[in-house]
Amino acid sequence: MNNNPFVMQPMLESRPIREIAYEVLKHAIITAEIPAGERIVETDYAERLHISRTPLREALRKLERDGLVEYVQRRGVVVRAFTIDDVEEIYTIRNALEMLTLPSIIERVTEKDIASLHAKLDEMDALVAAEDIERLSPVTRAFHTQVTAISGKNRILRVIDSQDEYIRRFSAMAIRQESRLAEAHQEHHRIVDMIEQHDLQGLTELMRHHIETSKENCLKALMEQRKQQNLQD
Image (tube, rainbow, N blue to C red):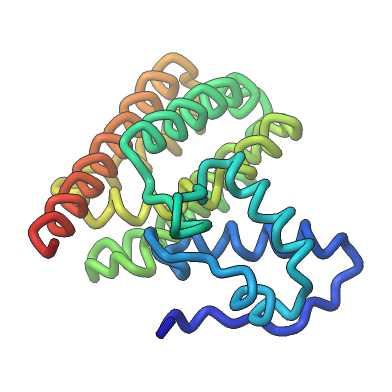
């Protein structure tokens, strides 16, 4: 019996149903609402999504190209677990793209931007002090999104945005693994200080270190997760 509670309301949007189904399933897989190892039975999920099996199959083919599901002999479509290679690749993409935005951030930043970033830091300060990891993770991602948005590099920002669901999940994993939470948060303050001082070299070095450390913590969390799963098996 399938106990997965994943259920959707009827799709009423005007976009192609296959695209809506793809986005709904992608989000549910990345956020682990549909967990790794779950079988996606066409009849079951077509009913949950209130669609026919044809657009569902098209959505599943696209998810397979994304590496989020795979066809397993005698099991059908199964949700893939994120691998170390997945994490490495996604952080490499994020790192490269965010580095490209830094010169424009330094060039375009305004006093209003700085004030807004300081307000976000104040919010993060309170969450760090309370060790409220669940609420801190999305606010931290919002901070980084706010920083890169200053660049105005809309094409780059769209590609970053396409990876953001992955990064949100990985960020939550990294923060939970973070043994130097206060130090990591101080880096956020230093990022804003360097932007305010128009220090491109310092900002570049700090951002590269900040992202690399986040990746390392995510990998630690992923390996710990695999270890626990192996013990349970």
